[in-house]
Image (cartoon, rainbow, N blue to C red):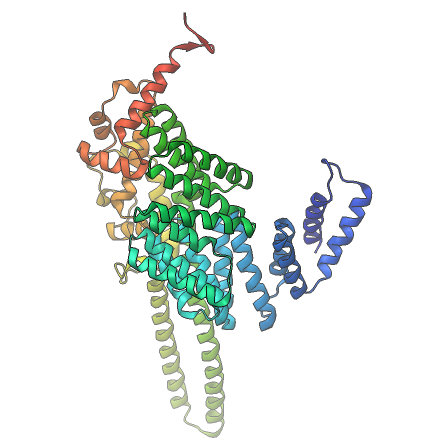
Length: 542
């Protein structure tokens, strides 16, 4: 209780601070407000959080939602559990907006488990939709579509249906299924009109992207501007920044560089002020393409570095690996719940059976038959538990494995231990950059087999061994290109040095992972290194 009080007290101290100072009367008032919050019921806290969220006072809303979750008790009543589920879902959205996707996904997993425990079916679509949103941000469109489709199957409210159809439309745009995308977005607009839903900025933005993909730029600009106007009317700053970014990208496609820079400037101002890292990353990628198109390779490289740092800070392999592990934990927890329920039922059956056996012992002298019966039941129960444990091992595999490892007996603990060994070994560039390095060699070095190694890499990073290895080799190639003596290197020498047997294969992998060709990257680095030699103690050499 003390820790919660201090937490709320600290938040309200920040609220009442003036120019970095807090008055004594303010301290007393904050203490009183904190105590009042702690006296509120769960429903009152939920209503208060929603009020402050609508007022864009996110810190206070976050404190209220956190209190609901932290004060909830196990085996609480159904109505209280529903409030906790809503709080967990809102916390997930808020943490996602703060770019903390691991925490967001963890809250969604907790909400999903609690939903399934109390059979709160009507709330499941919201959770599935938010899980899909996180996978969408990581460009895992197949998994995102899976969760959006699950949300659509169980959705019963019209607003939720609009949001899910819009998200499915966005997935179809990314997959370049233009007809399907148009159908889904048109359906979302139709339902919006029927229920008088006015917050159309996301739908309009996706329609604009669809027209841009079709190269119908007049229609694209029209819908981008509609979405921008609607976002401003609804005070949705992130959507405003996103639509400004979309306008800039659209102008780049038609070669209007001045307009690109104008809208990028507006978008970046909002994104930097509100820490919208995803939008900032997209803007710097657009700036990279702009500078490259006009032959300014130095500026292009500078922008690309900012883009790469932003992407790595939010959407890197490690963060996605954490989310994948949380998914495995959810599947394990779900199976554990099923086993616990089974065990409870079996315990009741066993008690009845024991009672019957006691009665039989009392009324019958055939003790031998009773003993044999008990032994038989015990054997049957053990066999059933063993069977369920095998099912757990099978269910722990990632949903994206498509049945490839269904016969694997690799447990979760062993999988994590093997993952640590693999990651530690991959730090050794002499091993990674060996042209003869294969998955069999990796399996031998971590004292496992290639099937298990492939399973761990696929389940954690959703990549095959070759793509996983290429990430490390290209990272080493970037390091070599960035050295002060990079002028001595050729593309072929670096390709062979980091483990590639041909320049073509190296070029393809480098372009896929870094976003630019190795020759462009090397030339840019050499230009920078040459210019740095012209300066000593920050002064030009005469």
